[in-house]
Length: 99
Image (cartoon, rainbow, N blue to C red; front, side):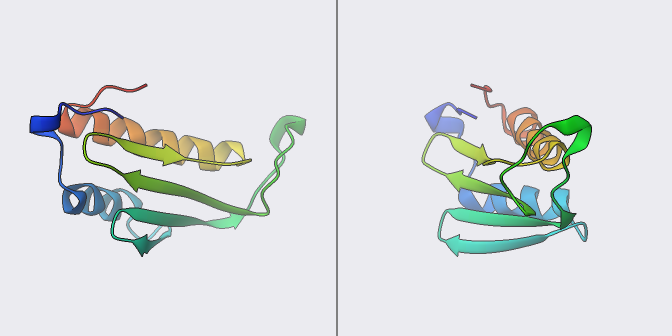
């Protein structure tokens, strides 16, 4: 999500939105000052025969000066939907453009 530099949210704003969005449905772990690792309950599923590389459900949030990346790698559909929902939330909440 790209933000106009002068209106970009602070890292603590993104973190607050992430904590509120995930709530008790997962765990948010801070890896460094601007990187968060989110684990979700359950094991990755292979819904409708779509292969997944992951055994657990997780996504990452990387915060930079004028953009934030919400990343999944080999995730199942559930994880992708949760990560997509968070990306949509912060884009709308902070006036960002999805790329």
